[in-house]
Image (cartoon, rainbow, N blue to C red; front, side):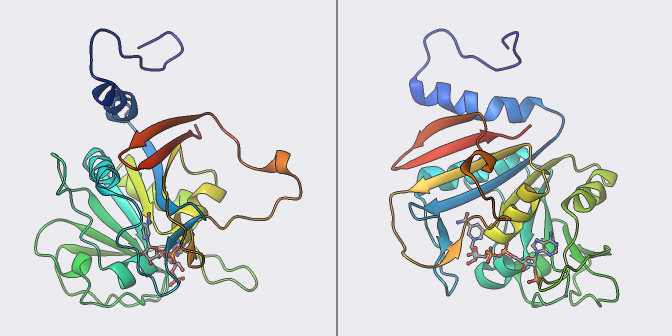
Length: 244
Ligand SMILES: NC(=O)c1ccc[n+]([C@@H]2O[C@H](COP(=O)([O-])OP(=O)(O)OC[C@H]3O[C@@H](n4cnc5c(N)ncnc54)[C@H](OP(=O)(O)O)[C@@H]3O)[C@@H](O)[C@H]2O)c1
């Protein structure tokens, strides 16, 4: 590790392997992180309007996502992703343990038959607002309630910091906020992410669900511009933003 805290790879090592180490060793070595991740098209979409998203990015990027899951204690997803994608959120294309799955479902609208609520093994935390009855019967699903706040014209929301506190109280300090765009945007807007992985595929969807929706800024110097590393992942390009 260099004096400035960054990791540098020296000696004869293949460029792909060096990139792998540069990308993942800092995450492997740190005791805690909150990494947001998005796989988007050139025009900033993560899915069609109907929610079809398999797949925006290519195989190398899917492996990156599974490696991130393997490094994480917990993986957080929004209710819409669970409803539309019915993801497993397990580590299948890398070596490592499955993270605890965390579903943000303030209104309790996620169907009881979703894989993350019915899988026999592994833990799922289902976070709902107060006064919401759990739909899931599986004993591996832990139902937690968390206070929500509602601003005019918006649905009830958990404060991202409060979600992270709940996870930390369970010893879950390495957190991957996997999607979708609404969920990652909430954590980003709240300043709750330490890093953000944005994988961009050379694909134009033209309409669809957006990667990021943040409060408007009047001037470009108010936009988020932070130190960023760039990696090639097959046909895709990964931007690794340092938000710490
Ligand atoms: N390309 C990618 O990287 C990627 C990754 C994941 C998913 N996807 C795709 O993205 C689409 C879904 O993304 P999306 O942006 O529409 O929705 P989303 O982020 O999956 O889910 C948003 C919903 O989750 C709940 N939620 C999120 N943050 C919350 C918070 N802080 N407090 C309370 N509730 C919170 C809310 O549920 P309520 O509406 O009930 O209030 C919110 O409307 C799907 O089509 C999926 O296939 C793509």
